[in-house]
Image (tube, rainbow over all chains, first blue to last red):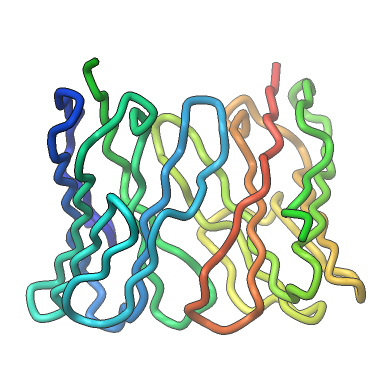
Length: 110
Length: 113
């Protein structure tokens, strides 16, 4: 079993809609979680980090963390064609490495 | 601040050769991590260095090695290249805490023929 699992996707949403991405993790020692966006042929870029239970909002992005359920999610509101990318969920257990999910590819239809 | 830089950006090698990739972290960052990304396996952790010491290592054969210099720049080396080593190799830097945000460089795309 992978340490971090993402809902398989791909996900296609119309422009202006909400894209919902989910991620579960198996290591209860994981304390920090990150969402990265990766455009085709490019390297991952950080969107959000979240360390505490609850919601964290940054512009059109909201990350949610539920440590009891071992669940992390990312909502993208008012989706734009420029949001079309692969979104990677990652967790860290204070062991100096990130464990990544397989990624969810999002396509925003104009 | 300048971001993470990696050289070279592209490499073509043949089986059996060896390769050295270089990474310069964000100024002030002392931790450098290396990851391999392939379509089949996704992003996998190779190793992490802090103050010239390897603090963690992923599940890769001994052909994969790395080091870090006193200026925090890091290199990774792959010896006796195999076709399956074709991948995007990503370097990430952070301040050095165990759970701190890692910032990625542009990557080195390696093709082994």
